Structure formats: C-alpha cells, structure tokens
Length: 255
View 1 (cartoon, rainbow, N blue to C red):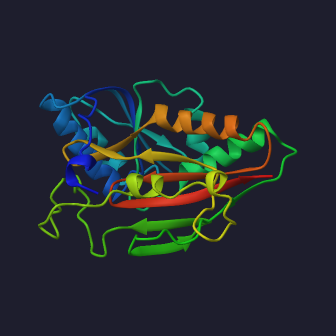
View 2: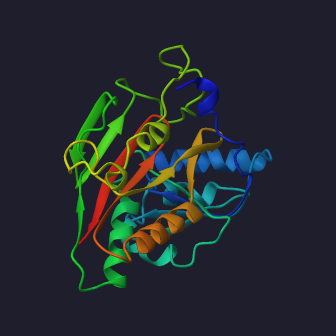
C-alpha cells in the first residue's frame, strides 16, 4: 500500500453538533483541543456535547471555566444516548470516539435491526483473525485490532510518516479490510477469513488539533446498509469503527 494512496481528503471544518464520547481524561482533552481549534478558526462547531454517566466527570468540573465554545454535558449511558441522538443526527454532525470505548456503533446497529424485525434471529459475533494485522484481541463480542505494536499518543493524527517508526506509514485498516473478499463473492466457508457478505467501515479521521471524528452521516448510512442487505435473506455484515492504525470489528449476523 503506497503512502500516496493512504492520504485523507481535506477534513470538513464546519459542524453542527459534535458529540464527545466520555467526559474523563480523554474527553476533557478533546474538549480543550476543540475549544482551541474553534478560537483559532480551525473549525466551526455550533454545539459541543459531552456524554458521560458521571455528573462530576472532568468536563463537568471544568465546564464553568470555558469561554467561547462551551460544552453541554449529557449525563447518560453511552448506549442510551446514541439510541436517542442518532435518530435525529444532522448531516453536519460528527462523533469523537474514546480510545477505550466498546464497539458502540455495532451494538446500536444490532438494536436497530431488532427493532425493524423483532422476530428475526439477530446476533453479534466477533470475526476471526484479520490476516496481516499484527496486534489483535477479542472482547465484548468484537475483535480489536491494530497495526501498532507500541503505545501511540492520544493526539497522533496518523500522518503519512509514522512518528514511531519514522518511516512511511504503509498500512491502513480501511484499505486492508476492503481487500478481504466478502463471503458472498468467494463462496468460502465461515472461519477462513471470508466471514461477511457486506462491510460497513466507519473511518475515524483527524479533523483538527489532534482530534479524530466519525461523521454521524456515515453511521446512519451504515445502518441503512444493514437494513438493505438483510431484506432478502440471511446475511452477515461486518461493522468496523477504524482509523488507519486501530479498529474495533464485529459482525451482525441476521438469520
């Protein structure tokens, strides 16, 4: 994978609502960075929302100090929040994921599928190992993967030249996953790397000041993909929340 093929398009600079997942150490850092980016004209954000179950989280404690872009705290469990928010998300909205959050969008899409077809057998399963990705772990019915076998800084923007290796970044999870042929085109059995019939990849990309985001419109489009491909029979859909280097993968299996 040549480095020139991995370059991201220029990030969007104007947003409606930006949702930060978590108000602790990571979330409060992202809020400060977005406030600085807003003050200096790097981004324009109409509304900044932070979601945390703790009404005394770090963002809540420091919120009164904020000038300019002031965060709104929503005290809720992440799953509960997204069940409501994503039904009304705008085209210009974006989500800042937490490095330690579970595979929230996978579980949201599975709940949506169950709402649409309450009598259908629908389950979440972790995919098998992804060839060529050096670090992999299973947990929470998902597979967590990374091209980095080292500790990355929270503000890494995954540039074309890796700050750790000091060489060209020749890897990208979205590219690697798209190179795995889906089961529908190969006829290969489950368990040999051909485990899904369609893939919905939500790519978290750097937007400003070390903050990565996933567009809410991409999450809604992924949910529509699950709806459409499952309309005519049994299907397995890979859902991946991924950056170039790291990702959470899960399969929604619809019987």
